[in-house]
Each structure stands twice: as structure tokens, then as C-alpha cells.
Length: 311
Image (tube, rainbow, N blue to C red; front, side, top):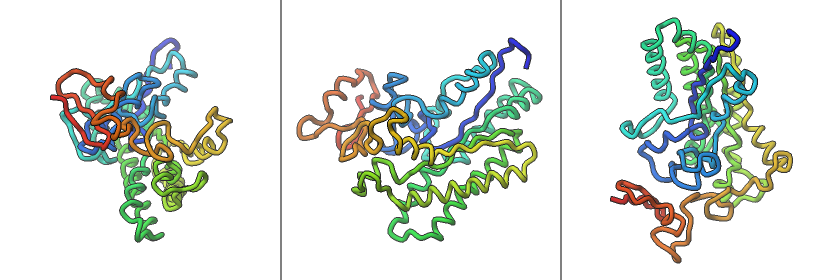
């Protein structure tokens, strides 16, 4: 690098809802798969962004260590969606996301030329987090006849897709990869509430398949390292990092770990941003009415989860 020169290090993010900055706003899915209403986003953005949190996600922080240690050399914006309202889709799986990445690579070549595009792709970081949504869907669909062999086969399929995509990115010129493993899925407040579990109990089937994925992911990354020339990677142990946070609350400045910040039920595990007793006010509660915009084509949600449109 030349001292004083502003250099942008690209970070390409691929992932599920854990990393989604709001693409779900444009997916043809139910309201349970949306986060485009308060209180989502209220802490940092002051409005809902489609992120399933009240502020930023891990990818939003990805550029900050670079800015901290390479002050003048990094210039990374806050994460934004990659699809538009005109591109409604049923899902945004890893193969579709790879397709978007290839489109970006082609645009870079057209606008900057092959040499500069190659330089950007080789120096970029490819950050990914996959598996959580897949495994929750798998357990929901196979809970009654869940078996060890079915679990192992499914994990093999998920990681097989990730391996193929990683190899294709390598063929595009990608050399630096950051993998986040699957968190403790079975300990989510929503599931603890659904299965009426005690404070320390978790859905064991989900914990098992998450651990199976994480162990296999470690093997996959080592195999890729041996197969791909120039392949560099890091693995983020999200599972144990989150477990440590929930087991040692005071260490991180928290007081509660097994109850959601908003919602209904014993652990506030459902209907975040859509709560309010329907026998008192309907179809909206006062907060929803107050925040309702007087504009055409405005969508809002009643307490029973029905989606309305103000036309």
C-alpha cells in the first residue's frame, strides 16, 4: 500500500437471516419471516431495516476492525440489501446468492477492467454464515421420525453446497474466506417457550445437529485448504461464543439471556413488534396506530398476524 492512499477492501457477505440486512423485505414469505416493522432497528438505525435485531449485525461490524487498525486504508459502508422490490423471490439460498456475486464480479470487470477487478476479488474477504435456517426447517419437518442417519445426511448436504460455492468463488479469484459456524439453535427463547423448557434446557435435537455441522465444518475448511492453492480462511466459533455470553451474563453487561427483548408468551418468544391484547384494542394497538404512516400502499399487521394494506 502507498501511505496516504485510500484503499477499499471489499467484503462480500453470503448467509441466511443471521446476516440478512433486509432482503427478506422483498421475499414472498409470511409476516413471521419479516423484520420491517418496529421495534426492529430502533437502537442504531432508528427505523426498521429488515435486520432481525434492534441495531447492527456481525457483517455491519466487519469493516470496523480494519478502520480501527488501518485508519486511512479502509472505506466500508453499512450493509445494504442486494435485491429490489422488483425482484420478489420465494427464497434466497446459497446458489442464488452466488449468482448475485458473479453478477457483481462481471460488473467490476466491465467498469474497471480485468486487472483491477481481479485485484479486488483476490483481496476481498468472503464472509458467510449458513445452516441455522436449514436445520430448524429440517427438525420441524422430521421431528417425529428424527434419526442420527438422517441428520448426518442432511449436514453433509448443507456443507456440500457450501463447499461447492466456496470452490466456485475460488475459481472467480477469491482467496480469503471467513466462516461462521451455527449457533446454539435449540436455546432460542422462541423454542424454549414453544417446548415449555426450563431455564437451562434446550431443544436437544437442534443442539445436536448444530454441533454436528460445526464439527464437520472444521473438517471441510481443512480439506479446502489442502485442495485450493492460495486458500486462506478463518472460522468464527459462534456456537461457543454465544454460549459463553449466555452463561456469563455479567461479564458482557447483560442481566437476562433466556427471554427475548420483545414479544409475547412466557419468554417473549413470538410476535415481536406485533403484540397487544386483541380483547382490549383491535385490529391495531396504540403503538401501531401512532406509528402508522398516512401514505398509499402502507402495510401493517394486526395482532393475529394478518397483513393489511392501506390503500
